[in-house]
Image: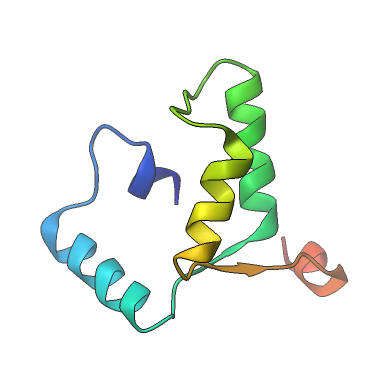
Length: 78
């Protein structure tokens, strides 16, 4: 997710098309912890956000991004 939205060397056209197609199909999801990780990078000054973080997250979810909650099984696998 960071590479898709923040990395200067954004994914190439094939990857971008695959993500766009998956997004249209409602098949793009990220772990809820990803938002925490991005917020921590922002708090440490390692990542800039042009808009309020909560607004950005809400916008992504409204546009179809699926947020996967972190549970014990995911924690163990991590």
